[in-house]
Image (cartoon, rainbow, N blue to C red; front, side, top):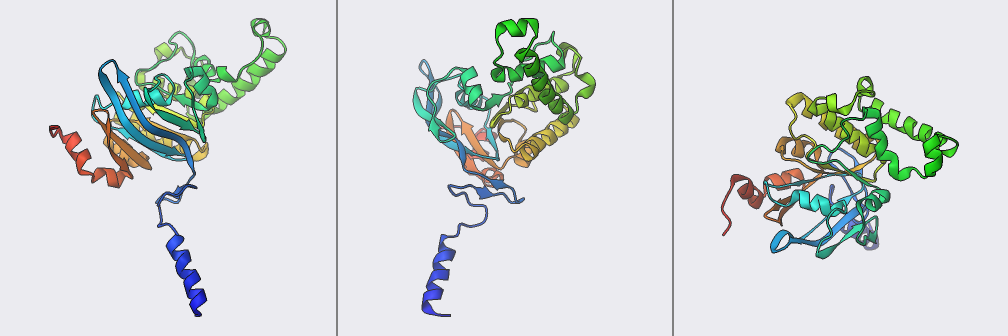
Length: 291
């Protein structure tokens, strides 16, 4: 081989990132899934409530197509971070970037129109409404028929609702809740309510789906079902997912990358294996005192 060819090949090898390493374009997971560029970028986020610092100078990103977990002990600031991501809280310091643009302060419905949807730690459904009608509320930001046509269900409103209902029926089939579609949500057991809340979030067709403790209060079988649906949503819809979860087994099985918070600070960020072996993370979960 000529010296010139050898030099070219050497430079190509130097420039090639190792398998699984993230670049600006993304990375490939160990199971062969292609993860894209950054979708949401949290830059130096600080959030205070009076004199209490809930989040202190935390940065991390979420890439297109990945499942990104946010974990930490109780009181670590995880839900506060998700509230910043979803627009419920505006941080005193730092920036939220979404799809390549800095996001100004917005109301939650404006954030939803950008392509974000979420579920809540405490179920937030309408108990007196049917499963179908609850899921239909996830389509509200996409409806633009006039109040008059909606009131008489005529013309554009009729066509619009028919189209949205077809979309919702597909989600109902996907989550295997056809047999309860007309049941009032208040009559459902807890695990099915969680599934309905997931369905409502999916009805918004989000670019980023945020799940706040989706397994909380579930038995083993319900957790297995929810884990399967989360993986299927990511795989079949290509939906990027950010989740908060206390069940470490679930987090390690589902997530591509994990960010760990403790007392409002970031103490770990990486793959499940990297986080599992991080001494700061181990100390936080074992309750080692902070000096």
